[in-house]
Length: 306
Image (cartoon, rainbow, N blue to C red; front, side):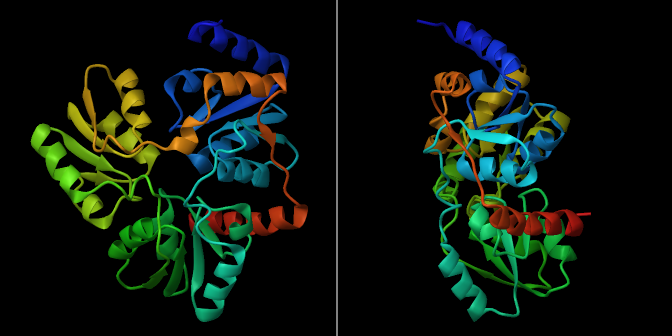
């Protein structure tokens, strides 16, 4: 039997011995963040992983994040902490369905949210993150955009780029999409002094009611720079916990008690420990042709995002 601290110490020792860099998405629990080398959003972690001296990367997150790390660091061994940790939104479309959409909209630039599989990235023109989507879409030479897979993030961008036309698919993040305008009203009534900060994966009516809408990293930065003392957080509820640790003098409230990503929660401290011991996790392997095709869309993201 281990205590949390004892297990964390074993993980810290093992990752040093085995030359492993632990990457933890911000939606992981706080005990995992404490043993990570880097904490951040999905693409930011992959960028940091490129610069890490370690030859093995352990992604505490979901599959598309580990795939993105492998796309950008093909020479490194990339491990996913839990083999079943997927993302329903990333898996909304099949490659065949996307190819059919492209046939129906041949004059549209296909913009893929980074929350997609490597196979889908390989079929798209450019990737975007929630932080870069607005700037990249503005910079695209095309006036017609096929935005996949999140219609909520796409609509948020569309509202700020009225000069361009958009096509979306149905779906979105099932966790953020469940948050309702009624929950916004209830939270504001309970906490009238609090600012509302939400992720643009939320429904348009929720995003429209926010004092700030932006990426997870953007929300964290907003709190850091804000003189306000109370905040309602409209994204995965682990962010509430992290902010409570970072700013104990301030108050943070979840916008919805149901905003919990079960796929993220599959990764536990014990899963990380077992992965380091070689008795858990999964190595991410991508065929080189697929990896290069997917990287092309990421390279376009960096070019249009300048």
